[in-house]
Image (cartoon, rainbow, N blue to C red):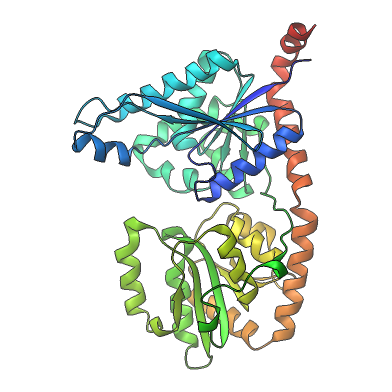
Length: 405
């Protein structure tokens, strides 16, 4: 039997920094182990760089760079810039043509799109036109935020309805999708990300560790609107008279919101207790986790964040918001303290409770570690992807076997 060829479309892939890229790389490796030939087509559909080049009169042909990376064939696609007037439909048409050309060259058996509002529509349109099944994977912001953009709403709904299968990283996301497109009920599933064990003891001491004082309350990520950081700052302000602490933010603010967050920090009343690392590599970020007494993830919505799974592996005591996979994975009082989103009061109460009880921090951290190793192991996620691919490829199996014979 021929090896099935899969093409994943995504916004990012290592060495690009970002949770989606890390997830796609992890899943691509799982698919390789399951016997698939895996291609990854990387392209953005927001075109910020193209608009800047267009306005500056910097033109370019459409281009494709193809390399093999960890057994995966990676294609990075760039649209043409032919005019000083940036036209989104021109760029999208170029990317569609390049994806179609990739298929003509490699003859894929299945497409798999990550982030439905950018790559999903384009990929699914091509898949339907050439009669190839498409899996769409919803990661979070595509249904939490982009669905409210009138420009994206129709495309998102159409893409959901025309997918061979749709996956979600939380039940909450799947429920919303099934409200928007009831027909996906029988061709959708929700399961969490996984994470491989990490040897924290071998990591070097991070450069800012000497600046940490008191109880270290930490959070990791690209800090933006969805992270609920305002409520964490408010909670810390409530605690400053009762607790000696450092608020350690491992990462940086997204550029478009930087002025807002600088204002929030300035008005927080705890700016002298905040340490921000700035953008660093994943390995550097991981090295900070053992130095946190409490890991916080007070998100307003967040899919299934890798940062939380890493904190669980590091046996940190976690305070998490009851949203998406955060609220599904964490069990209040058993392996974490779970609070309602946008509640500074509940956050402050949970942080103070943990700060005053080293024994509770240890117990919750150990329980979190045991849960992530058992229920969020790579073998569990790989089995889920194996089932999804079996379902999506069912209509094609007879024809693939006929070609093989």
